[in-house]
Image (cartoon, rainbow, N blue to C red; front, side, top):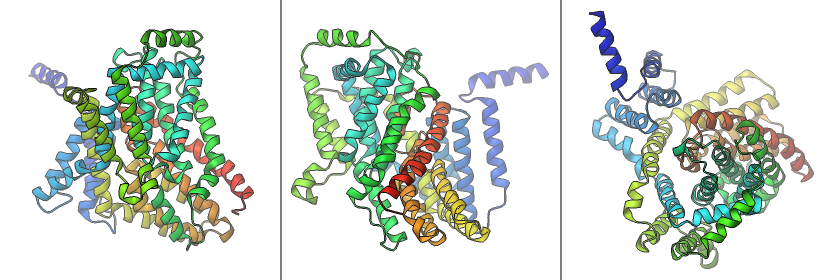
Length: 501
């Protein structure tokens, strides 16, 4: 009898598509959360949604199953439990609503577009050019990627389009030139390091310019309301205030990541000559490469909103519309085929798992969980009687690190920033109010460093497979702390010089 039970368990362990022990731990977490009494001020269904969300995150961290499967599980549970609606039809509608989110489709289309760089060889050519210029050491290539991000940031309002659609394909091409490929198990040669630099340059540049990411105008509005119009961040004042601390972060970031996740190939003395030789073999630009270049130029012009600047707001196009225009242009010119698009598995995998996480974050906001959390934090700080400095630190850290519960910076800022800024304005002495507002402004972008679902750029780069989830979260946490410290120190001194306090 025992032998049959053992054999059944062994068969079950081999046959099921999940890891048994992590699955049991995750199930226990869900049960404990569901048995925990609903906190005061929160609807029981909203608390059950919190339980589902936290369990999904635990399951992803423990790698119970592939992330796409875990996300599908979350959709199924939300639909069956009806925590967002009183009917199964309403629940499944809520569970699938995020798949109409333009941001998610921007990510998917950007991944498919990047396939054209590899297919035509243009990506390899660009990668070789970077190696020829900066390729003596891997860290030099990292700085090249960071500078590329910095140059594009003022003109590209979509950080996803910039980091995921423009810089990331270049980074992949450079990695491939060194035979650093996750499919071959050689991602640590240079690819892991360059992927992390590629990503972490994105939040820094997003913090440096008002036009560097879509939610920044919302931040401006929140700051203006919280200060009673005392601080109005124009494009120029934003760029000036963030200039020195931002440049300090850009300088430090490739160095810090170099020590946190060092590449196996540190010195590449033959890389420059190798790159020049390969470029010579490739010859002149082929027709397909020219089409890709033209398409990328069109995307950059439209993402930078240049037509609207020249001819008025009627010519402004959403970033996702622009991405679809670019994809359609590549398909109708034969640069990539529809089969190429269908075979881009990472794009469709990202659609499922990122869509599910966005859905959970949106539902947490919709059901009042996020407001309950921020209101509770505000009341607790006021009741504690703590001094203004620790209160400011708590507000900053809670706001930034609560981004673990969000898959959208826009949703996070919409739900929490104004409340936190208002509390800060009430608690802090008047002379320190503006520095607090500025570091919270920076924090609204720096928080994107934390997770692989923090913003639209992260699933694109994470989905390329160069960085494990554990390494991503570890480096993200450390870089978040480092960058907050830079803005708190270098930023404070810089803002003092500028006369803001």
